[in-house]
Amino acid sequence: MRNIFRILILVLIVFAFLILFAVLYTGGTIDVGVIRIVRAKPATPIIALCILFSLYTLIKKPSSLKQAIDENSLSLLVCLVLILYLGNYRTLWASDTIPARHLPLSILREGNFDLDEFRSLHSRAGASGIIYRGNHYVSFYPVGAPLFAIPFYLPSAIGTMPGSSRFTLDLEKLAASFLVVISVVVLYFAVLPLTSRRMALLIVAIYALGTSSFSVSSQALWQHGASQLCLAAALYCLVRGSKEPLWTSLAGFPAVLAVVCRPTDVLLVIPMGLYVLFHQTRQLPGFLLCSLPPILFQLLYNRYYFDNPFRTQWRLTQTELWSTPFIEGIASILFSPARGLLVYSPIFAFSIAGIILCWTKSGFVLLRYLSIGVVANLLLYSKFYMWWGGSTYGPRLLADLSPILCLFLCEIKMLYIKAFTRIIFIMLTAFSIAAHAIGAYADDPFWNADLHIDSGSNVAWLWTDNQLVNAPKRAWNSARIKALGLQTTRSHPQLFAAEIQADTPNFISVRPSKRIWLTVQATNSGKAIWVYGAMKEPGTVSFHMNWYRKGRFLDRFSIRKKLRYQIFPGDSYRYSVKLIAPDREGHFNLEIAVALTQGDSQLQKKSIHIPVRVVQ
Image (cartoon, rainbow, N blue to C red; front, side, top):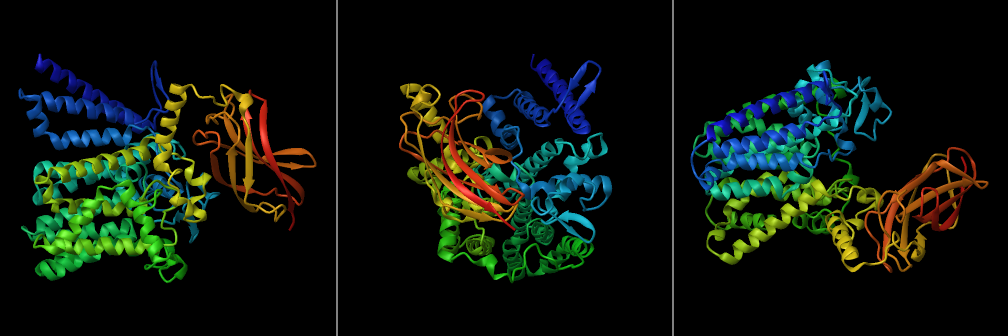
């Protein structure tokens, strides 16, 4: 019976592989005879493959289930991680990842690194991370991540998928997820010589699920996934090189390639080079030689596309780039509720303890050099003018530190001795995983825009309204409303009432088509809980910014915004909005309203009006 079951699973594995190839080759549209599938996602057959492979692994030998799990723990962990990465069935991208999403296709189909063929992107150049240089549309950001994504784009590139297809979003997610999963495996073998096998598995599980690897790096083609893979490979080479020196030389290639993927990783790579210089001196020539290919690639790429081999993404001499006060910056990147590293991955508190321990006792000297890189990286981003990393989730800018910080967990030997420490470790691990699971599966996608995170850092310190707490808050409020039978605007629309305040003068003068930033605070002054949801759904509350001229509604310039969570009586809701002024001169009336939908065309609203003059 076991043999029949194994054969059946193998048949299903082959079938899933064929489906996966068909999905990738056709760009998600399969049309064979009576079978027609539109917008198929590669995540489905991959998840099926992971499940089938795990089942086959557990039954291939006539051993106990516990023994089978123990013998195949790494492969089972990898399957679980891949399922969790892909299981949300969406790509959590931002404008920064648009060039990386399309570049692998350009490289494979056109043999170049420009984006000239993607005409739909040209009108968004600048806002989408694409710039026009030397008669070409090119990426403003480094191109290392797209290079790593090439193998995952290959079936689609040689297939029938059009370059403008939305399937490129699925390819972006696929490549990003696999890059991080590969880094999980590489990091496991880097950690294994420094600790027990069971602890090594726990550490890489933390790396995979309790850090930005889960919520950011695996969700889209940011620079971080590829650089994390390179850093994990460099760590593997250096750790193994302590006993087999040739591997120390080979570390030069992935270490410098990490810088190609993300230039700020140079602060992590320089200490690696110093370690080789002072402790593996004979391997220094080999280390430098192996670092040459990625250096030459970057110089040639810069020379060809930017006419400057030493072009950098940012001019480091720009003093405005480093304008954040140090105390404010370091406190924010570590402890702010919207972006703090130790808020979203509190397990790294043990990594800090590991850094301290590596300097206070004899141990693996490489860790001391790596700690210098960690501190330098923290200092850099604490001074960076946009330390919050733009519209993202959690401490994205510090994602590259994850493999190195996880390595320091090997230093925490006290876990084997003190039960209390083990309990704290487990609790912080669970919280870290939950925090990043929220980012991957239940993130508040409109938080960054609604509070306009890029307008300043103050909103990053809101403890009751941020991406980490809003999803649990929505679930908890829904449970309370249902269990206690509380009155809502859906069940009692007649109890709706609101008050509005806007941080704007009584009169606005602006040039045509220019931006107007407004911050609005709405207070629930009624007796029913405001309910969020689709704007046309009866009982939901939304915000309307309506333009009028001579009493005539101008729909083209008006904006609607949904609530992100329920608002109880007496509570306030704050949001920021970017309005575009009308494109003609004249006198206009801007209405800011809190509206309750009572039907497809019926609205009950509370509003304020601001006169606006549009002049050249």
